[in-house]
Length: 504
Image (cartoon, rainbow, N blue to C red; front, side, top):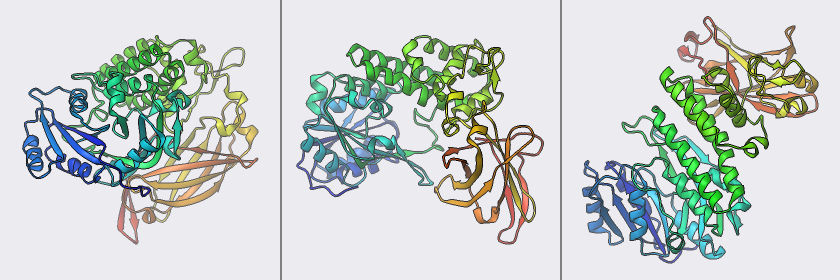
């Protein structure tokens, strides 16, 4: 966070919560701690039954800037209490905070300074997702906030549609009221997707700042998961597709065609890939319902939605789904949905030689691939970890893809292990790739399990080619007898190590 001059008291912070007595005080205090720029904190309790209201009442007794609103009935969602907050706000600017998150120090000063200096109706900053209890952090839509920017109209930056959060933004209160911009009422999941579309449709002058302005807490072990994490029921997917459909219609109706197209592209690249990665883990009934609903949703897309890059991972996933009445190729689709994407064999061709998804799905062509350099392809690398006393070997195999890999001349694989929670890296090595008789390339790397130590480690690879270019790839875990089983390995440092390979 960059230092900013303290700002005058111009901001209402709306905190919403339901049955979150354990965290709501921390959220409110983080808003009050922003200093003089926050003239009021409006805490809207959505008819909690766990003592949340009493926690807020005790805080308000000692803090004149805190106002507490208690809803008489639970709304079932986040939109209604946020709308109550907008209605109650008395300051020129308003922002939102969820009861289980916090505002970092200086967040409001940074947002308000940009709003005043740039005459912006909406200011957006960096949100950081923090996994709890590990503390691992991921910057949300980091590319948007690598540097400051001022946009006269949102369509100047179509990637704004990727940041559908409402909580990392400061809004001019009258802008919301003049355009009647509100959240969907009631039990509507993903209300922020619709709200953000309404904001962008009104074409506000916007400022983007690189400052960290919101800390989003992710508690995967919580008894009650957040909406974004609770994806086990297909109703969650239906709600998400509906929110995206509404966002598209809102922007298209406002004449924002570029942003409307961007919403559909974002859906394929973000939502579709995320849910496909989990699809093979669901039961058959879920998969059939999910597949049928997704095909219905994709049927609304037109030629322009597919034409930009037909083999981009999200679009290729969508084309396979749209062309197939029943779920199919789920393991292969899951690999394609990974980040970076990996297209695993088979590498089929139609009768005329055109690359296609498979022999029995020739209408899904992969025609752009033969014209692309290897470092721009969704390269597939198989990996198998073979724990042994003394030395553990990592076996790696790079697949050919329509002749482009051989043409590029793969030379080496750079191997790196990254600790999933801390981000710490270890076990770096560069190993040569050797051409095999079956047309693939293989490599072996020694792995010091004791040096890695405890925890979950993700394998990261980089293929380098003869011309010096390279491609970052992730590995596909090879399955088979004994390949993904837990192994006990003697260790001088730890006595014994348990090594469990897994597929992501």
